[in-house]
Image (cartoon, rainbow, N blue to C red):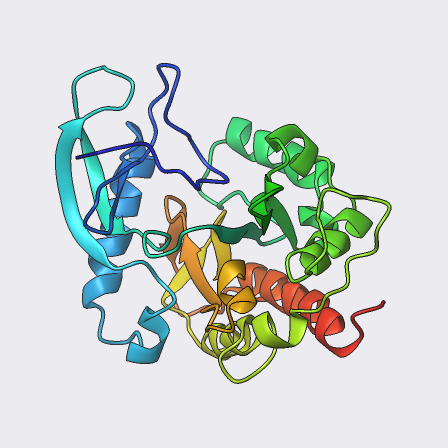
Length: 282
């Protein structure tokens, strides 16, 4: 049985006659192909990436597993539509806290039309992309059974300042309520979620090492999704912090050149998170 995802925080969302992704009970995420070259490009990337022997096995864990494509009844009721069939990275989690972070100071790709470049550049300038090298595209933080989720609307997230981004990265790993702006985030879970050998920071650093050498692909307008289970911490269990790269409609051939746009944004994000780990009260 297909349904609209419960925990999507960014991207095109299904509902109210809109075309968006679906999930099933088998751990699959169905992303509708965009009708222009973006859909073709994303299928081509997943097909190439999944078989490219130059990609180290330890790097593949940072990408959703690709299960091909499938025609499904579209969420907007328009009939059958081709979908990417991907690993649903949220399916095993009950109340996940999620950050979707778009990487790169430039989200447009070199071969894009002038109109598209102008559109992307405008948004890059209006958000933190141009100055930080990344921006938060969406988020939801689980508070408690009583407070539920904090999930600001897209307009609010797009207006985040540098201080808002820093605050969000702190709230993501805090035990106190993210909705109360009068209370400073306590960052009490920073060492568990961000730190440690299996934490988000270690995963980002492993990914960074690959991007310092890889010249196979250039990732434009791609996001890093960070997720963990807050309730597991409260129960003394493993919260399983995890990162995944998502959104590959604008991946281009690297042609032997390092992807400095993505690498620079990734380094900036690592610096912000490292600051939370080393000085939670900053």
